[in-house]
Amino acid sequence: MSDIALNPPRKPFAARYPAMLVFIGILALFTLVVSVLAEGFGIGVISTSFVKTLGKTLCLCMVALAMDLVWGYCGILSLGHMAFFGIGGYAIGMWLMYARTEIIVTSSLANAPLPPTPAEISDGIASQIFGVVGASEFPPIWAFAHSFPLQLAAVVLVPGLLALVFGWLAFRSRVTGVYLSILTQAMTLALALFLFQNDSGLRGNNGLSGLQNLPGLDHIPQSTISIVFFWASALALGLAFIICSWVISGKFGSVIRAIRDDEARVRFLGYSVEAYKLFIFTFTAIIAAIAGALYYPQAGIINPAEIAPIASIYLAVWVAIGGRGKLYGAVIGAAFVSLLSTWFTGGQAPDINLGLFTIQWVDWWTILLGISFVAVTIFAPRGIGGLFDLISERRSPNRHGAALGPDAGALREQEADQ
Image 1: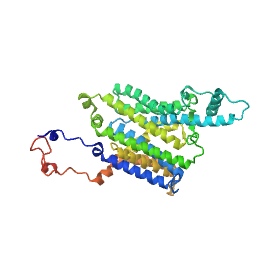
Image 2: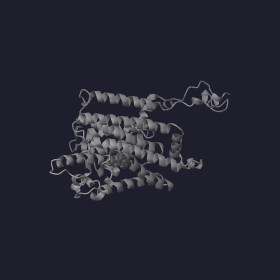
Image 3: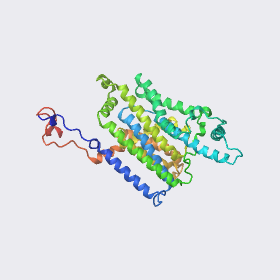
Image 4: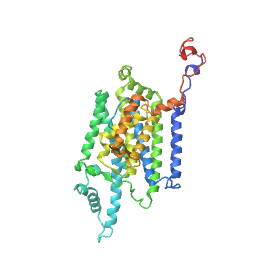
């Protein structure tokens, strides 16, 4: 028997995961269509506000990818990934507020009899930013807020280190299942409660605002800025999908699936289960943080409520509705629920008068979402993404009598059809 028969050539990555090519093609087409129809560079059919909504939706799809990788493929139900999403938003928001306020303060002091000193400018910036919470000095965590490169590094390093430390403590103690979910939720709650305090250094409940105003780009209309952020969000989502597809397509992906299905057996086979789980947890936390860094400049504001545990629960619901264990299912679930939520809570859905009471969707949307989650869990556990499996009509290959096992007489066509 030839060496080629014993060691068949490994298929290219794209051939092993064709869904990736389909997804990238659809995403590219969607981006092109929105660009042509938008106000920024197109014919103006789509409003700037809706372009921002679509850009934010792409960021939510990106964090849903991270959630599906850590939960759907590795079996870690994290109820804290929206905390990493928020940390990424705070990290970039600090620079945006500092740089924008620096321009305002410098302009206001330009007409002073004497040129302002760097200390006076710094004090003016601090007073402008923290006057709302009764402070006038920069907290230590704002030490690098003046530097765009350092704050970009913080987008990756801060959530990455937090996830690394938390994961190392949890996984080395072999905390699994619902106990790990409770720990991640407790971490998120503790972070949110800390940020609600005025002395947290991040303006407490007021959060960071005005993030849509990019420093030095006041002459560029929001219609143009919104489409540029939309492109950046689409590019980030596409790259994240490719990287996540590569992670799950090889041996590494097989190991994390095995950990999800039977962690004890994988450990018995000699694999370092804790190392695999720690990598996935940290890696997905960084993806979530990058998504947050792109989301909040489009949203314009971030406050501690964005990091509350309910946000991470919503994230798990999106992934479950879209289809856990399918990357494209997570994207579909996040996009579907996010856009539907915008429609219902934005007052666009008509109220329903039932006589005794009126269903106002602004109040009833969360109830509808909860019912949808229960229904999908019971009647369609594979989620919306499972519908694509039915449409594609995946069947066992027709081998026409070829052997299906290592022996010459192993499982012929008759057995394969059963």
